[in-house]
Amino acid sequence: MEKKLTNTESLQIIELMINRAKSEEKDSGKGWIIWGWLLFIASMTHYVMNMLDFNEGGKVWLVFGVAGIILMAYSIYRKRILKAGDPVKTYTGELVDRIGDAFFISLMVTVIGANATGAFSSGV
Image (cartoon, rainbow, N blue to C red; front, side):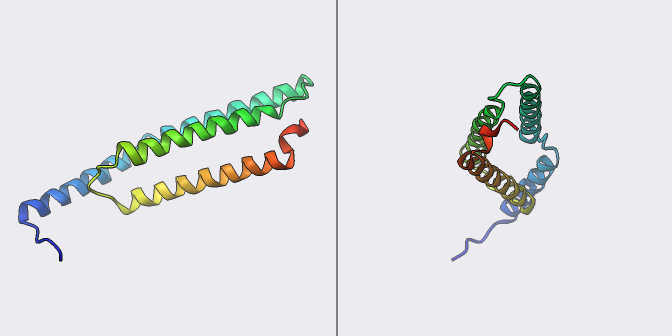
């Protein structure tokens, strides 16, 4: 049975939803920026190591994968545990969360698959 809300409670919920939508629009995207820099640094390091004829250039991607896992764990911790008490969820917020989750899942499949096939040890 649903609880009947008072006018004040209804207005509080609407205000929470509006404020949540405003804050989502102002999101800085720090996680994506950090991810981009990690990818850039790993790519440039691999390129330089190949130019200097280091045979272990592919190991950079293992470090990159570990950094990705750490970033993902921190993201999940911040999203799920620290904000567990959020009373309001918006469609946009849920959609962005699912896109991020799908990205990290596809990344892990790629990293694990490349490692299993030996792509990291090729040096190319």
